[in-house]
Image (cartoon, rainbow, N blue to C red):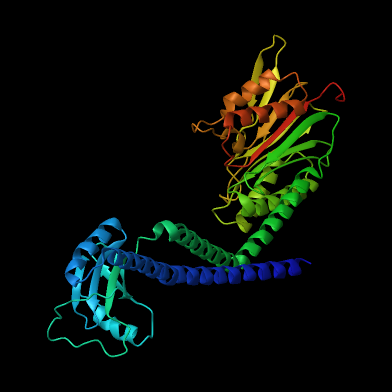
Length: 469
């Protein structure tokens, strides 16, 4: 089914490319036809209207000789200013009888007379470039017959049977019909640009389809990896009567390199683990899964009292399977309710807080720092094990640097002081509500900024006097 959808998508893109090419070709041909034919035909018709006005005025004035033509041409040229560039009246020999407008530009009448005499066309037109822009020069028969009582010498007479006596050469500005065809040409130009954009877009989409499909497949795989990671983090957590806890992990990308775990050891103690792998994204998540499995494997054979040895084993394993650019920080603790004690090892992780409230309402904060360097960097590293006697209702807060280093738009970090203030304010509440209050405070502090690192938080409350409610 997926392959069929991809094939149909390719067919649709191919059709889009063909339609874009067809629309571009059709718009180009239409624009060419409008600019080279419709405009030219309209200007030729317009020149005919100017000539009809000349002939009507000549009949009304009853002109007898060509000496009277210049005044008539000047009058009509002044009336049609902006449309007529120049007008020439020539005889069938190409000799100019009268002209007005742009004098000095060579006449084309002598080239067109033969065509008009032979009846091959009703008019002859040529596009000429001038200093004021392009003009269309149209040669038409001038059908008003002048009777010159003193014929000019040296010329040949009109051929017998010829209906052509004189011709008019009228030059009209090519920009004149912009009011009529301007909107049409603009629309055609927009159509060509749109067709070109459609063609380019469809071509790019078609050429980029394999990469897009690979990207979509990778996104689906990342979504699946995120789901597997979430199940890995939360699927094996158990409830313990002597310990109330709440956990959360917010990866900066689809998958992250932070992890947490809460499980029962062979000795009956409860393990609290939180790790942070260097980097982000898929590489960090793979190393995180490896570290998670290694912790569970070592814990399966550990009696709960040798965390320094366990950290050494983890460090050796990490040094073997990772490069020097990849390392991980880890906090691993065992809570022993029968002895009221918390044993732990801190391998380069941010020191968790053990927050205790006194009878007078004041708070005491212990930082759990004992341990060694990060895992996977120094093969011969030595790790120490720390211990602390706990009291009923003590609050243990373990977090990654994605929480304390979360920054706002002013590049200010959330910091540990703000974290401690939220914890003390919400001390009396259940741990899940305390966790929610911390996350809300971080969210409000960050505002519209995105998380730049994975954020993981584990809040646990000690119960020595009996099961939690």
